[in-house]
Length: 478
Ligand code: NAD
Image (cartoon, rainbow, N blue to C red; front, top):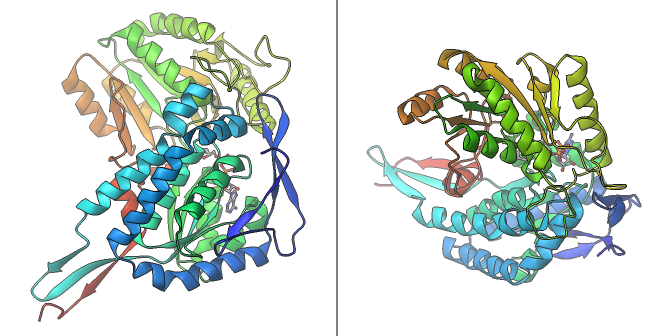
């Protein structure tokens, strides 16, 4: 995989850019060696892909739901047959340890695709409305899908799946940082036999082709996952042609730990969740708010868990954490840890510098800060690394106030032995998803954020809605 230059996929063919000769390399974060070289597209290739998607739209939209689902079922079967290749691709390009890649990162592929089929079968696609009208759901048209590197297959499947089932045609621009998983996903789609032009993939960077994609007149809708910074640019670029823009952006999620919770279990779970995927999850519980009466105990537990956290080779099985994705990301995290120290927070585990025992690889020390107040930079900015901040609160009202005092609103977590209290507090969270006492989220639930965490809802039925228009035909019912 490392030698070949990765091609784009336009109108059912693997192609090199028509005129651009630029190459971008992706780096394996554990070895710091090149793991992929990508031929990056220019504006002419974007245009070619948009025209191919437009030309394919009417035909594909006319497929019956059963025909589209049959193709997606083929895609699932191919994915499952080549599952191990996907696991390796993810660990190689972005450093998720093998077990995480196998059990969670790659699993999101078939997981989302299957759930989308269930949701599509259960959905009411048409119904009578009012006295004589018909309400019809139709595919929105040509979609641009832009994805990040951190849960690469999750984001690919959560966009491509509903777009295909809804009857849309699409242009994917995957993250240039993690192109291997997208390349494989595109190979699976190619093998499944979708009509040419239904799915297109252009490689490239945001600065080079982002605007060409998001302002293209043939594009009807954009589904974007990434940073709030880029999400804002995408929305502005799409505004002149009034495209629908669905955004899944950053987060700085609070984890409220009440004194009546099972403290050891709750803190340990919170720390490990924060460090999972080397802290590079948009919904990571990165701010642990702890009731003052048990704050010192909680800090002690968290520091112990962080010091015991093992780092290791992403290619190896076992319960270790991996490196962060890139030098850029490593440097940004180091800078933010230093800012935390400079602003007076106390490092109780980890700190600046590469983790001990590694002479290469972007291994960040799992870090816990105590003595943090919510106005500090490390409590407000998304670090996107294994860095936990711990903030004390005096009562329920203050916990809610601090939890919501953030520009983000993606997720929140509540730990309490009193379920009524946990329910009450959950309802007050200004966040798209709340978890009580470690409950996980399944593929049928909506995923997305309030405030600057975005405006879309992906997964299951809600993921389909993003890709559908609503039409009312008055007089249809006679
Ligand atoms: P990023 O914003 O740098 O890049 C995301 C994608 O957008 C990449 O494909 C990139 O090439 C592209 N891009 C960048 N600038 C663009 C522009 N001006 N126009 C069009 N495309 C552009 O983000 P990242 O570093 O890849 O991913 C990490 C970020 O993603 C974090 O902020 C994280 O919280 C967020 N994220 C959010 C969710 C969610 O569901 N809310 C899920 C995963 C990641």
